[in-house]
Image 1: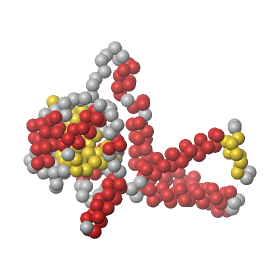
Image 2: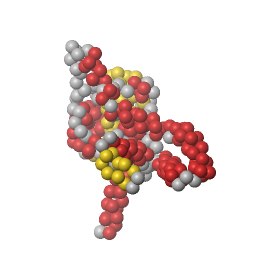
Image 3: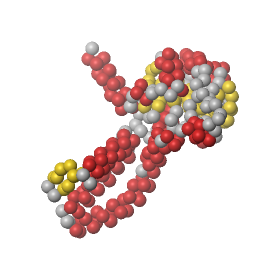
Image 4: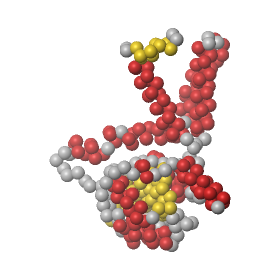
Length: 291
């Protein structure tokens, strides 16, 4: 190994620097995943005990080192049990970002003679229905997918496999419709299912975000989908992607965001963290109260 420099009795090589950088990046990603949830406090507690264990072992404090060592041995199993939902999210994040998760890639490799399906479709029914729903303060939750039919979530509701239309969306989310309670899954120009149950985020969200917004954010954390939310209280339109949100959007902004998403353009930069959104809101309130 190529030696870079020495710190006392420690020899630092290029491999050591890469190792440290990768560990730092891994810890940062874990922190981002746990940020805003109760699990972050438990994680920091485990991390503190582990650092103390490394310190007492370096100082050759045998009794305390053996006690903490036994705790750390059992603590790994305990951590897996406690952090089971977070570990699942972390693995979903890795699987979602991996090139192996691209269904279209496998189709291209296995059926290279077939024409690749285009995920872009006419989204005007979504925009037109959103205008009507927002105008009447009718709550709605739409999951737009470009890569998968989301069969697991679709099977939690009622399978429709119907052509996408404004009238059908309005009928589904009508307050007196038996299908209105839940989400609609839209894929490849079709409404695959209605009344679908979505995972609810466990993170802290602003007070004005109700269960519909929490479910939309949770679904965006678990899948690579774009979520459109129409508020029942205010009629405002929001979107969620990768656990981030865009609030109080115009219909033109919604159209542009959906088109960019379906065309595989980068839309993640448009969205903001929930914590940043809450901070901006507090600043606006503080400035308005001063004026």
